[in-house]
Image: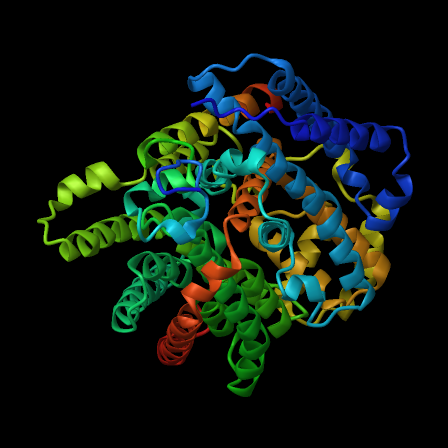
Length: 520
Length: 54
């Protein structure tokens, strides 16, 4: 069978991409760029649009006028139009739609702490990409020439999950408190087990239960995406899981700070609770900042708990691999050899994630103590030190600082003209957030922080790749979600997610009230 | 599209053609092959970043 379709769509998409690149490069889109505040992205727009535009034109011309014979070349090249169709939509969402939503959201002002509506609702390129895919397939249908390529989306997601390992390092995770590992371990494994149990009781498909358990147990989109192929989850089930996590996370983000203040929780107690009970990283940060808008102590604890969950991802995937095959094969009456299952079914891309994590921990991409590509290093050039005038300004305002820890960190900064250690850096950031000093003094504090807190270029590059792979994969995933499939899946995942989420939040609060003091 | 057609992306057909689910979601013959291609892509990207960004 010859798969290639003689259709001009790829050629047209290529020309469109080249036009976007040229219009951006020569300033035709300056008005749009200014309105959407995407000036920092113009380089990326020009480069990517030129590269993929050129590829589309060449392959599109080959599709139109070349001679096609049955074989691997024909099969794999026939996936290019569909792949480019997804990518074009992902580009429009990432470059234009997501910034547009952000502009509208910001014009409405902050709705919680310093968070805007799009932050609170998680309306980023990920969610908008899935929505764009769903709208495309349900309103316009997938054109025949794109059908083959739409099936490339899972490859993009898997590649993204593997590269996700580069954002973390063992050295940073080694600093985690024992309490966070024990608590997160208990609640991650407990949540996964509970979802699987409830799923069986309420007769949802194994694939739905498996993917929902990973999402509810570990956290967010990455865990869902990593677990999906292991339990052969349908796109609808993945979308339901992501929807459940986001809806639950938004609710928790508003509710947790209120309950925290009612119970008069300390910063560490609240951070530990938010990091355990809220599922999505962005919403964990939102709740922590809402609870303590004048510092980052709560945020730091919440992030430590959030990071710990990453450790459990490979373990959960392994568990789900064995569980899924046992459930499926038990139904057919076949004996299961667990060792064989692990060998045959364990997804290699999760091993890839571990491999990248190991490479990242050696310091090959960034200093070994980095976390998500950021690291502290105060061995800086003379030009980066604070000036006499700047330290003088801080000295005149030092008396406003009441907290002894903040006062000591500020004094050390004034004496040395740079932040001396990572703890001082966190304290200074807390002082900046608290807005105790004048605006000018706060600018000096921010400058001091920027001078010692570095971003690894290679990890930034990996983050861009991950962003695009996820945008591509999730837009394609959205294109596989039909209205009929959503109706068939029903609302059961939301019910199970709600039950497990509530139990997790209440139990973790009780544990924290009983066992967590203000020190970890 | 029929169940026998590997181009079928309508997941409503999956109940009847469970064995083909992988091919409904992926252009590759098996999950293992897709994993290997993803791993190769990731390693290529990592090498590219290491060589060009460093």
